[in-house]
Length: 152
Image (cartoon, rainbow, N blue to C red; front, top):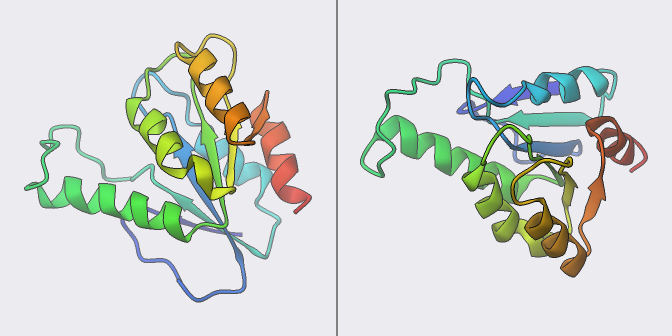
């Protein structure tokens, strides 16, 4: 397994499975669930994990299309989700995660999303209805979602 964090380049021509980690990142509110996924999949030699949790993120960056670092981050995430074989999307109950909800809508028809949306997430009902409508696999825990990836 190889992990590549935003905004680093990743191979686009590979025979490895590419997994994008979408979901709650809100600093100070969301647990670092991405590290948990990486730990659970560390022995998978045929896997590349694309992790948007950037090591050098600066929360003072203006979220504006004219801001080079911000735009680079958003475009990296969109391209990575397009390129991924799987998107594991986690909704942390301690967050609002509006961008994750947006990304669920963007990629709902892709047939490559696996969702973890625990009880307590403020829009769990909406997430559940969208997932059922688009036949998106929903798991109760990160471990169950990872096990689904391990079997494919």
